[in-house]
Amino acid sequence: MDFEKSRPPENDNLNTMTEAELKELRRFLFDERILLMNQKKAEEELYEKFINERLSFREEMKELNSRVLEERKRLKEEQSFFDKKLAILQSGFANLEMDRKAFEKEKKAFKYSMEQENIVGEYINDVSLLFSGVNSYLGLRKRYKDLIKIFHPDNLDGDSKMAVAIKEEFERLKEKY
Image 1 (cartoon, rainbow, N blue to C red):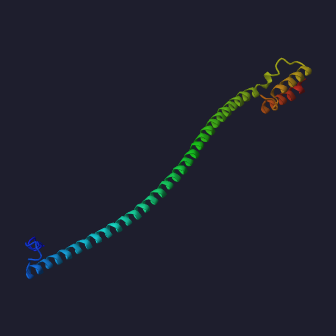
Image 2: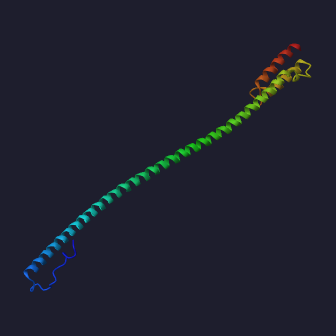
Image 3: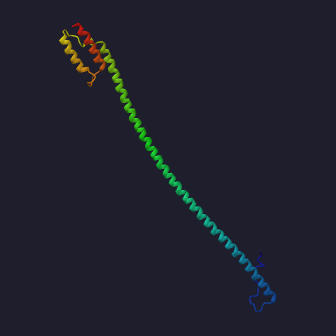
């Protein structure tokens, strides 16, 4: 819109104005009123658009907040689940370590017992040494009872193989006396 068109007539006194000037003033006021109404309508549309955007923004914020809360809850549950899994794994590893130590202990005990069996096996071959120095049936019987008391399987350090070997040697020597 041109600045010249939007200016009111120069004469300020309405009584001294001519009919043409009044018409021009009315036309100017009408144009200004239309312009103001269009501006007001544009402002109202802009305000309504702003209000709608504000409401949609609030709705989006509510939705995002609810999503954030759900995600936080889900993450908290996952963290709790992870902590439980970790505790289970840690206890499992602790149990495995205890089992490993127990296995090592059993392995050492087994090796020791195998070594003892080898030692006893060597002695079984020389059971006759246990009866050396015996020269009568009564001495043989006494030595047999003493040895059985020592090597009987029910004793703490007893050995059944050794007991059998002692008995066999006793039976063999019994025939001799």
